[in-house]
Image 1 (cartoon, rainbow, N blue to C red):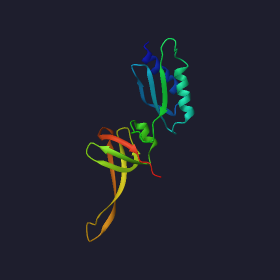
Image 2 (tube, rainbow, N blue to C red):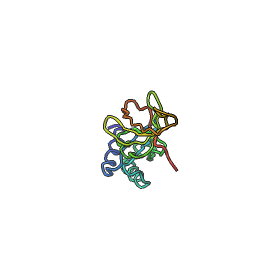
Image 3 (cartoon, one colour):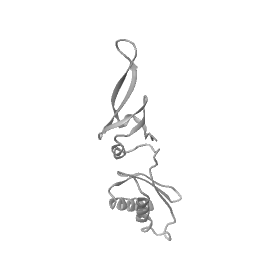
Image 4 (cartoon, rainbow, N blue to C red):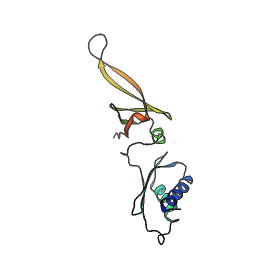
Length: 154
């Protein structure tokens, strides 16, 4: 078993112990720097990162293979990549860059194939003068999403 395969196996075993956590990215450089990025259904605590780090580090022998290990949570401004990430952010405002436009809208529904977002805008009335508020709803397939980021509102 190669070093990379062993790290992947240890990471999978560690994540099995913490079902609310899931892997966003695993990078192992040529110099054996291991970078693990996690997310969780209820967020990621410092202790979660420590637990996963220990699951990997305590089962590798530095005498056999020298390595560096970094376990971190996906940052607040990190783009959403997995369906599971979209599900945990239902009700939040997302900035979504599709192949054709940029939308800032509330995530209201998530399926295995697409997401549904809603936003309102002020548009001219169809009859008469002035403007009215119009509610828009749109389904966006994951294949059409270039990048989706949660908008932080203070």
